[in-house]
Length: 98
Image (cartoon, rainbow, N blue to C red; front, side, top):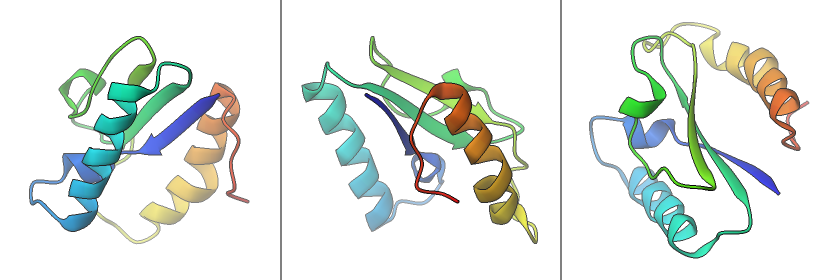
């Protein structure tokens, strides 16, 4: 199964509970799951996939969608309604976004 995890929280400069949870979840799956294929998804114009935090392995890859790093009105809507559906379709990932 192809599984995508929005991992942009791992890229945040300040630690938070959600960041710690996401990090633990990703690291746990990396340590124990060799059956599924994971894509860790980040948003940035400035950074490349290899610069992003998180594990890389046989069934773990990092992908960066080219989205401005700073927040602006409509940014999340563009991600949710345009970029993510295209990315999911291209990668064969089922999506609950409509």
